[in-house]
Amino acid sequence: MKKVKLSEGLSLSAVVQGFWRLDSWKWSAVELARFMNECIDRGVTTFDTAEIYGGTLCETLMGQAFEQDRSIRNKIQLVSKTGIFKEGGFGYYDTRYDRVKQSCEESLKRLHTDHLDLYLIHREDPCIDFESTAKALTELKKEGKIGEMGVSNFDPHKFNGLNKAVNGQLVTNQIEWNPVCFEHFNSGMMDDLTASGIHPMIWSPLAGGRLFTGSDEACVKVRAVLKELAEQYGTTESAIVYAWLAYHPVKALPICGSNRIDRLLEAGRGVEIRLKHVDWYRIYTASGQKVLR
Ligand code: NAP
Image (tube, rainbow, N blue to C red; front, side, top):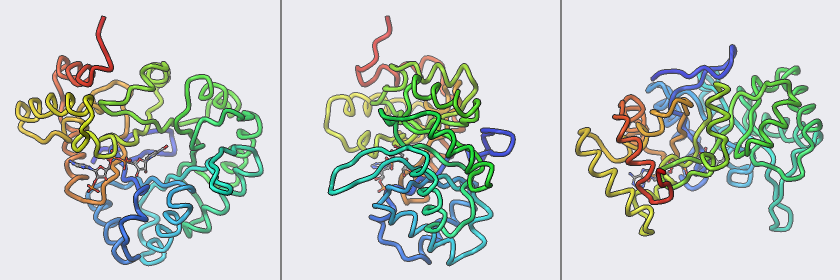
């Protein structure tokens, strides 16, 4: 599997394994360590998690697997995020200096590691104080607790605001993109990232499976196009989606959310397929959300 360079010090595998759904897998530490090793053996060396996943349980479970097999941690690039909290059932964001510093320390403890390779601000906090967040991230990097810093779900205004405050050190924006989600094409974020050579990580590349199971009109329409293209290219529908993501010049890194190795292999095969230019537009317009003028 190819690597994608995000900075001088950090390259990620072209396909990333996500652990958002980990608490529903009901795996022991032994089973999780085995799965992690299977990913690594196939070149999928970047693992994505977040403080909020499973209400911190997902980080704890990953930490137990790293303890179970201590060779894993040094073979991977570990990504986590902070910024989303819940109090009395009410969700809110906190990206202030003290909170970011404390959260990082807590994540390191749960994950049984002394550093994160990449640390992201999870959501575009409407109350963000760029200087305060930047101070925390910059200090964490100087202390060696994080290798690189980035954001997730940021619009261009917030991305540029924070990036300015950290002197251009943001190395990615982890965003949702799939054939039924075009938020970051609409906001101009995709153009900004392409222009500045910053590679986004892509969450829910298969719309959380909805692309294949959803009965809404957009998914049904996309499925019909994917089926036709899969037959044409002699591959599967999901491989075609990964090929579509990989085609874009922004050089995105999809995050696979399944716990099945066969799905991960399909993703790996998909990013190697080179679509015809016209076929990229067939998928872009398939759901009906995008119309070419
Ligand atoms: P996804 O790959 O789009 O969705 C995974 C789901 O799709 C799984 O439940 C999987 O089921 C199902 N699926 C996959 N292929 C399928 C097929 N051919 N037919 C039917 N169902 C299929 O990704 P995701 O899990 O939504 O997100 C991926 C990762 O992105 C997460 O783990 C997390 O790390 C990250 N993420 C980040 C944010 C953020 O705000 N930054 C938000 C959400 C997620 P099986 O398990 O049965 O294969």
